[in-house]
Image (cartoon, rainbow, N blue to C red; front, side, top):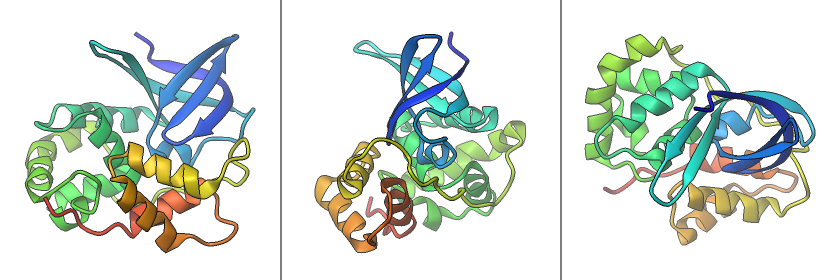
Amino acid sequence: MIGRLRGEVVYRQPPHLMLEVNGVGYELEAPMSTFYDLPTQGGEVVLYTHLAIRDDAHVLYGFNSDAERGLFRSLLKVSGVGAKMALAILSGMSAGEFARCVQARDSAALVRLPGIGKKTAERLIVEMGDRLERLQLPVGGAAPASHAGAGPAHDPVSDAIGALEALGYKPAEALRMVKAVEVEGRGSEELIRAALQAAPPQRS
């Protein structure tokens, strides 16, 4: 089991990144909460990892902290929540913000996340309530600001749209969300964060 990696950031294009560790490149998927704290290309970082083994692929997920990874693993145990939805939750709010939503039974905030309707939000509140105390997550807090110069040259708008689609939004919806917050000079991660913060509630 791969539990932690220390290496150099080769590339970062949410939700994907690659770390080079002793000459070996590890491809990972990570939530936006992790991307906001990543160094620029060539910088060194330590990530806690979770390896998911499926019939068609082995997928490695990376997280800034053991607590964030613990929340991801707990979310996977909730009925109807898979890795894609768990990443979307951690991308749309920090671990502390999620803990606050569950403790306050704030389903309205949860249904703003991709793929989460009212029933799923209520299930998250019920099933995660008892687990939060064991995870010892800080309650509240916001995602840190993104770093400038995040990697190789890409079109920030296209990258942001692609990342939102990977998190579960439909292409047309992702395009609309990014265009609504597009400002000259914003990087892809800033666009993603702004789009997620302004996301409308899910209908189902």
